[in-house]
Picture 1 (cartoon, rainbow, N blue to C red):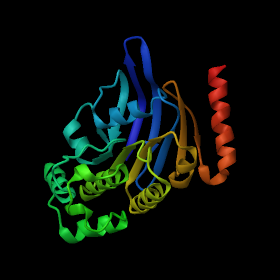
Picture 2: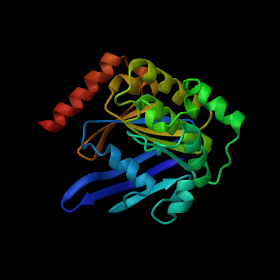
Picture 3: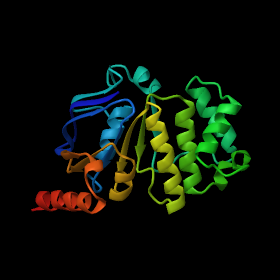
Picture 4: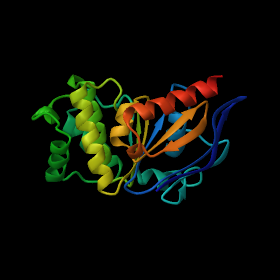
Length: 236
C-alpha cells in the first residue's frame, strides 16, 4: 500500500533521507523510530507530497506521488503531531468540513461509531474545537482520516504529549484500524508505544534506515538495547 524505492531528499548539501527502501502492506503498522533529524518526518512529507524527492519514488497503492499527487492523496489520511482544526467551529463542523473536502458525506451513525471507538468525550463533538485538549484534537484528527476511508494513514508523532490514558485509547484504535485492513506508517520517539502498536519497527538515524525489527520477538528492554546500540554505533 505504501512503498519507498530509493527515496532520497537533499536540502542543498544536507541529506535528510538517504535511499530509503520501505514497504507497508494493507493491515500492517510500521513505526519509524529515531531522534529528531532521523528522517522520519521527511519520509512522511514525501509520501504526502509536501516535499519532492531528490531521487527515487514514493508510491501509494501503486500511484507515484510525484507524478499524480491528487490520486495518491485520495488514498491517504494524515494525522499531524499538532492537528490543525478551526477553533471556532465545533468538532462536528470540523469533521463535516474536512470530509466534504475529501468528497465524502458524513453519516451520523458512522461518525458516532468512530467517536465511540476513540472514546471521544460525550457531548464534546458539539463544542468549539478551540476548547479541546491535545488528546481530543488527535482523536478528532484520526476520526477525520477514518471518515475519509483512507487506504493508508500517516501519523507524525501522534502520541507526543498525550497522557497515558489518552495514549492507550489511541493505540487501541490504531490496532483496530490496522486490523480492518488500513496501512499505518507512524513516526515516533517512543520505543515502548512503538512496541505496543507496530507490526514492524524501523530504526532511523541521519536519514538512513538502519534496521527493521519484528517487535513481537523482543521484550521492551531488548528493543531498547538494540535501539541504543544503533545510536551509539552511528555516533561513534
